Length: 605
Image (cartoon, rainbow, N blue to C red; front, side, top):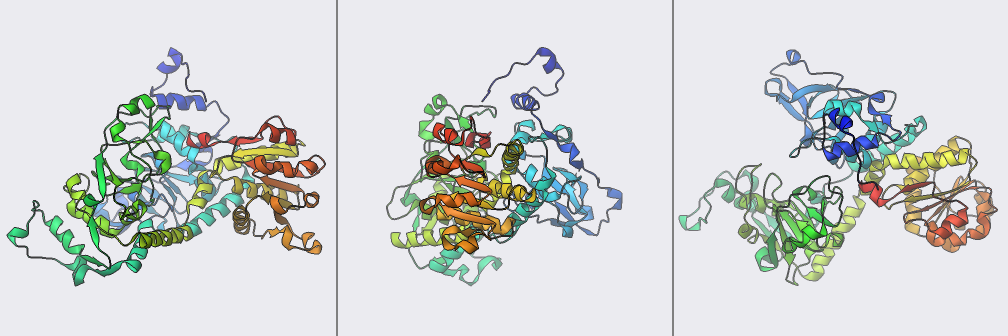
């Protein structure tokens, strides 16, 4: 990857932005791209304050109104006289609102019919689609590469922000936006929304299991309705603020098992401040910050990582964390967020606003503790012990050590962990989110294969990293080739039943058809099906001749099984793998290079 550029003085003098991120972005404009202004109108309707009735309630949408996980909008209902000065825009149903603040977070949503005409904060830009569906445009804007590029354009160190001018000059990193992807985009978006609407937040899933398995009694009949309490002078600790004692009252719970204090089972350390430049390209050691902890994820969110060099990290080794440790935020509006450190972040350095917990007692499973810290019972303790207002909250390390945690036997902890994870699996939306956030590479992959097919090439190889939508791209390819009349029957070949089940589920959702396992069908049935699935382990290679399109998954490892017939097949054959394609695979397909490559590094750029 090219990591340096040379600029003439003349080109710099004509630019109003000399930041490294912006200049690197300028280089990308040489690619073939689609201007955003060709697809949308910007801020079509401004708010006319003269039309606002002071006594009427209005639907008002601001950044906190939008769930980045589900795209759901929960507006505030506010009277006209209390509308904030940021209330500047109107949005109509079908419009897309995109946050111009911290664009890397991907805060955007489609305005639903029930919010038609809502008032929107000027921290958003309102995009009205032209000749493209809202769902299609949403997927393009939500793509990881687009979000990264918009973050490069944003200016401001403390709160990176996009200007309207920058968005009007922005072009999507795709040569064209094919019209025949419209149906597929709408289907994919609808599938994601259906899944999202059935999802409960992480804390709900965890709390339901804790309550069922461990909770004996909560609130002692007083709960949040308690308005007063009497305390003896001797019962006062070193705190005289009302909030502390009221939270103690509200958090009274009884468990079926003993509780222990965190200080008795953990070692603690606080992180450090390191000045990190955004444009740093070295990816040696991750530097974990407050924003890398997410209430709706059990593990540290490493989607937008910051790195420091090994040399710099060596100076801060005492502030490093390890896989299996737990991080807690101790200051600011995010006080009390927590996350489990995954093994791939072993050795990462932590920010000064984070506390690292290392479980040192064999009576408690770190993952069990991590799950407990996501519950309302833990959050109540955070609220009780923290000082300051919502924005400037702070919690002392000595108070974190006083936190009480219910601790059943290790066997019971493992049962609870297993039950939570089973429920989370049923509740999982990440898989579909992955398809929606890598939509542009999927389009590029399909377009590259179609170009090859139209040029008479019937052997194609694709390398796409795990989690970037390989299977969804292949579903789209089947749909596009079927609609064009290029194929009538497709065969999907894989090595694992779980992959076959995933492929089947996506076919049912997006192609309205159910693929069948060849091994379960007789000859008459085989001749009537449109899409079939086979496993390498039980493959009769002569059956491949019956299909117009063959998609061979995990081609590096299992391609040798279809080598004997691939040369004589008249079918279109697409080999797919997440790893770099080997010389042997390239030779088997008689191609010099892959048709399309999208690596993990590409996804992280």
